[in-house]
Length: 115
Image (spheres, rainbow, N blue to C red):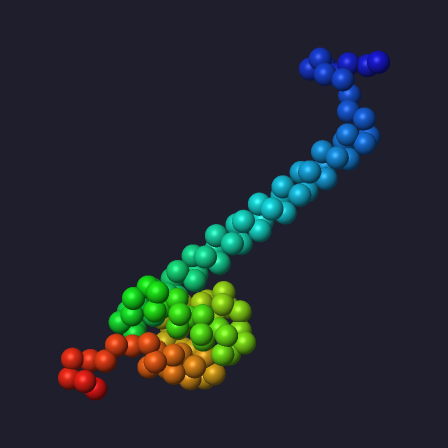
């Protein structure tokens, strides 16, 4: 039996494959977690835009964002990205803008003069 310079036994091919598989799984999980963190940040930013634009509570902003996503059949993350981009550039595609206006109108509290 040979011994490595660090005093450990050499790994068997099966053990090496198991370690390599585990490392690959951990890398995949890490990539998924990083994507989730990024997506969550974009969704939070979009909710922030809706809070300002519609004078909404955070729960109302979430409900508007979710409803726009559902009614346009566009993933929540993508709708969020488009709304954040809209806040930056002023450009928003017509189908999302139409649905956003509809949802904001249904969630926005009436003004003091009742309008």
